[in-house]
Length: 157
Ligand code: FES
Image (cartoon, rainbow, N blue to C red; front, side, top):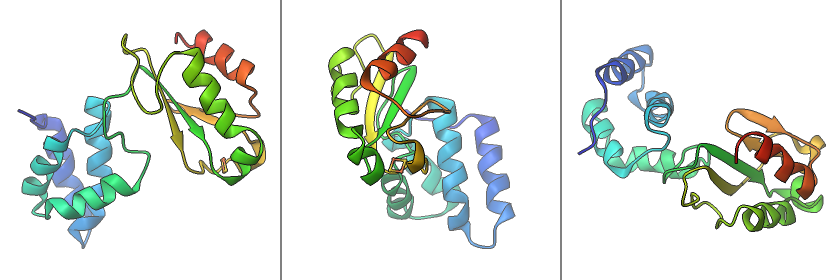
């Protein structure tokens, strides 16, 4: 059964007190859950809904709108490859395919050893350095498939 830590519960309550509308606290609260667990389990939504007195549907709307929230467990290394217009025109989709092949994973599915997840995502706001990917909290830009594989291996993938 999913449980929020005391610290996370306090965090959510504090966020709720910061805003006039409770809905404004949804994004920071989901981030907190993701920070603690690496992803946002469906049970976490029920727990947040009760604590925040917000319908689950509203929390799910936010959760499923943003690709920055992980809806399933991700590997220690999470390579999010932008496949939006600038990156796609510069080989972003092929880059994602090459990474999936190199690390023997499917798009968005964590490797069996838990080391890596490769996910296709929408624009990450770094269009002038396409193609690019976000690896955990770091942007790696102007990529080729070879360079991307090398960088991920250097990071322990
Ligand atoms: S299209 Fe890839 S960062 Fe914007």
